Length: 153
Image 1 (cartoon, rainbow, N blue to C red):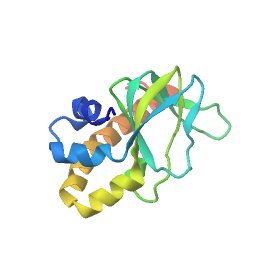
Image 2: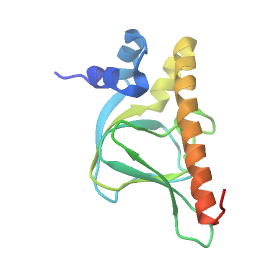
Image 3: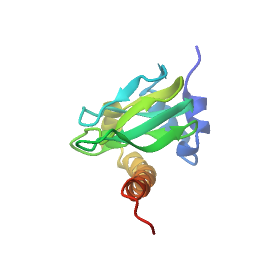
């Protein structure tokens, strides 16, 4: 039987993470696939997972009343999708859909939150790593909003 452990251990997001944590995380992981145009999650829905993109592209978009959705960022192979599972109230802040056939590893957020509560060192590692993801999304959002409102810097 094949395990996802080697794939997780090789991913840049988990680089330098203790191998015992990789083993714990693998217990919360599964392979998933999204067809072109398929929504992975919608803004406001309950957020209970995050994804390691192995192949494909995913668009993150936000909704503005009276406007068509605004694409904030495109997530690609090697990127991490989703941080809302880690922070209460555990609701998605964006929509995400597959721009093309996408294969990913889904990590169960409830499973991981339990493991982080049991081992605060693991929780701290996740917070440090996801702080970078959140910062990247905030910067991408800022740049898109400047573009949408035609603000020159």
